[in-house]
Length: 116
Length: 215
Image (cartoon, rainbow over all chains, first blue to last red; front, side, top):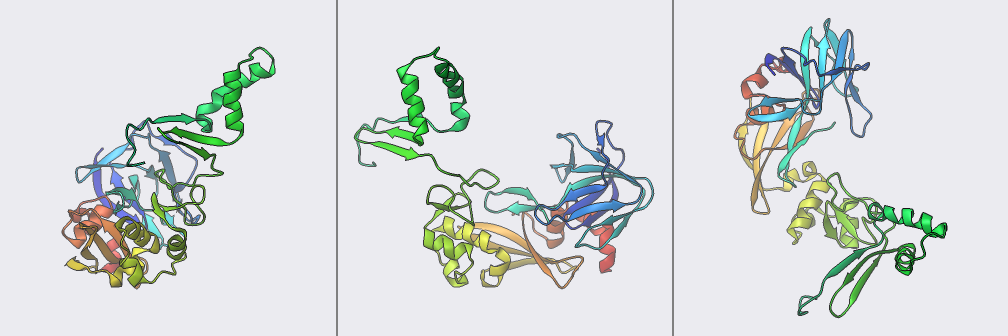
């Protein structure tokens, strides 16, 4: 998968532009790309966007490490990404992979994903 | 047990439900009168009495009862910060705690000084994790490795003789609020550590749209 130049973050959600969304991805009827683990907060789009569910094996290689893709996103017109605790952002037209921020788990010496 | 010679070790499970599902099959035929087997009857009687596990040693037998519940963390270690994890025992992320200490740690009533000086390193480590590293950071011996132009600071500290690295960084939406996050221990610059957290290279991190707010 080819990652493009555009990249932005909202809390624990990383948004990376990609060239194409794979045909194996499954279109959903939702506009939420990630839910908070305990808070009930969510990262949700307002605008013309299509959210796709990746297959379980979909990864993007970053810094030599495979990072799991959480969702794919097709923004048809510039759309607003909202969240209860973070500032709104306008995401330009394009295809994107949604990744999750990560941190080092010092108890287990391994990477884990951050949930806000 | 350590001093026993030629310990015979046998283990018999009666109460693990995922292993005893087959008894329901036999129970049906026992109830129907098709099977009349003393061994099966004895086995199910043990199960119904709540025996969970039997360990037979040379000179004695250990029998444990079925726990009412078992609480675990997300990687299946015994864990609960609200109640016992199993029987009357307290665990935090797989580490056993005496009740009194567990109560102090989980209620966060233990003094930072006492927490940092806990002798059992495993207990100290998980207790610190539960207590919240952000609450301890001022009391930890740490070394600043790098600071970025956005105010991200990469620190190094030692836990259990292992070097770990963490970032202290301003929340991008609320710059007055500091956040703390552990990062991969081979990272050497604050910007690169932030880039790693956000699944990108340092160059990509600096090009991130959201950082325009900081300029």
